[in-house]
Length: 400
Image 1 (cartoon, one colour):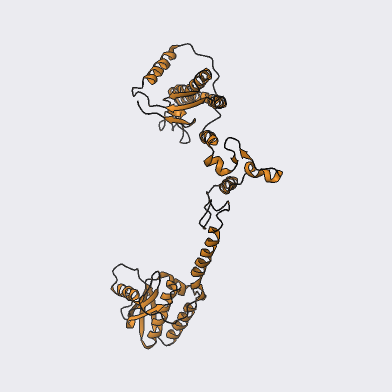
Image 2 (cartoon, rainbow, N blue to C red; image 1 turned 120 degrees about the horizontal axis):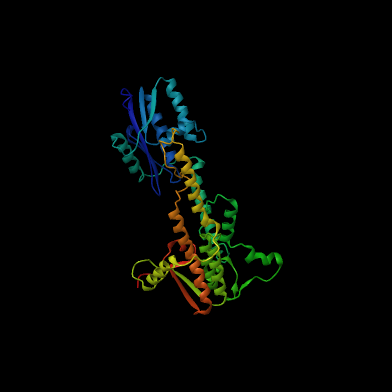
């Protein structure tokens, strides 16, 4: 507006509430209430058209609005909207008459005096009588869509016996799990709607529907995941296995022992307790473990992963010795000590020994399960090794 000081400035605005639509302009205090079905886009285009009609008797003018969408519709020649066509016709007519017209956009609610006045006039017009003016058919699309959606929702709400109603009682967009692998997305979608070969395979075999033996209920995905008590224990195991590196020899043996004890009716609970907090049994176990450090080495099979750390340390020492002999190399002064790259951490023999200690904790758990065969029906295996916790379904015990 500052770039056109010789122009008459007219500001335009539109307003829409839950039940009314109106537009206004600062020229002659123009205020119009449109039909309630009109869009705010049509209201602001109508205000621009009415202002152009008033400008036929003026020499020059600068029209400003805070509706960027309406100016983009005019600038992009959106001839699908009838008001845009009328505005373009008016602009052509004013140009032929030698009237200089400038349309600009100004931000709303930033203290522009004329824009605040246009906004106030538009809000006042919301309480006026609705004028008889035609609006484009595109303004009825949201109302039509909402009407048919309500009818569809009423029909869907009456079908509560449908097995899919409890999954999505309110109609709307089906939320995806955003899986990169399509197969995983298919499995999750089938699980949500309750379709699986286990629960619906009888339809293909022409048999009776399967029944959950302990509960004597029809077997379904909902029953397996939510209702059945027996499946609850199995689900906890599966969740633990999903975060478990079952390639470890001892860990796999522990899980097999635990399943065998469950089949015999013996419940085994793994509990984690913090170390060095005064728990008597934990202190005794710690003392026994330290005493075993001086005992002869027991010949036990170790997984090949336990040898990665000492092998890397050995290779690194050979690499470092070769590096130390190349003192004439210009890069030796920059990095005399070889380190692992950013793709992996630096491995040392001390860490390898610590790794052996952590892995030996799984062997201790396996020994505890061996002794559980002849013990009470319920056995609690307590350990302070936190690295075992994410691998097995481990609970937490507080300091007594």
